[in-house]
Length: 300
Ligand SMILES: NC(=O)c1ccc[n+]([C@@H]2O[C@H](COP(=O)([O-])OP(=O)(O)OC[C@H]3O[C@@H](n4cnc5c(N)ncnc54)[C@H](OP(=O)(O)O)[C@@H]3O)[C@@H](O)[C@H]2O)c1
Image (tube, rainbow, N blue to C red):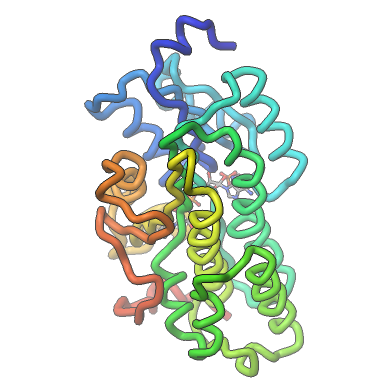
C-alpha cells in the first residue's frame, strides 16, 4: 500500500505486462536504472506466475518502487483481480500501460491459434477495456506488436488488407475477422479468405496484425478529452526465449529501447494509433526483407 507522501512524490505509475523475463524485464530494468527525469516512477511488474515475478524483482535488487502484480492477460478473472488491486493498492490511476505479454506458436491448429489470440489479441483488448478508464490525462497505452504483423498484413489479399486497415473498423468487426481466421485454419479455407497459408508464423503474425489494427481502433475511441495516446510498437527481432535466442537477433536491451520510445517521446513526436520501431513510424503493412529460415525450423 502506498502512503500519500509516496503518491505525491512519484511521477508516473507504469504497468508492464509479462515482465518477469525477456523484453518486459529489460523495459522495467531500464525504467529504474537509466538516468531520466522520471526517477520516481512506480513500476508494476506484471507476471502471471507469482514465483517467476518474485524472482524477477529479486534479480532487479528488490527496488522499493517496483511492485509485483499477478496478471495472466489471457484470463478475464485475472484481469478483473489485477484491476481491483490497482484500484485498492495503487490509487486507481495509471500513466502508462505497456502490453508486452505475448506468445508464439510453431503449430498450425485451431487450438494453437485460440491460445495465441487469447494472449496476443483478446487479452490486450480486454485488459485495455478494464484499464483505459484508469489512464490519466496525457497517459499512454503501448501495445507491443511485431514486424511479423506487418508482414502478415502485406501477404493478405487486397480485400482483406482493406478490411484490417479500414478507417471505420470497429472492435466487433475486427473480432469477426479474427474468428473467421481461426475457424478457417480448421476448415482449410485460409487461402479462400485471402490469407497466405504458407507464410511462416502465420498465426503469430495475424495475431499481431490484429493487434496493430486494434491499436488504431482504440486510438480513435480513447483520444479526445483525456489526450491519451494508444500506440503499437515492435522491438525488432531480439534474443529472447520467444524466438529461442535466434542467432542474428539483436539484444533485448535494444528491443526495450524501441518499446520505450513511445512511452517517453514527447507527444508532438507521436501520431496516435500508429506503429513504431526504434523511434520511427513504420508502415502497418510491409514486405518481409529478413531471412526467417533459421527461425522457421520449428514450423510444421
Ligand atoms: N523477441 C522478439 O524477437 C520479438 C519480436 C517482436 C515482438 N516481440 C514481442 O515482444 C513481447 C515480449 O516478448 P519476449 O521477446 O520478451 O518473449 P519472452 O522472453 O518469451 O517473454 C514473454 C513474456 O510474456 C509473458 N506471458 C506470456 N503469456 C502471458 C499471459 N497470458 N499473461 C501474462 N504474461 C504472459 C511470459 O511469462 P511466462 O514467463 O510466465 O511465460 C514472459 O514474461 C511479446 O509480445 C512478443 O510477441 C518479440
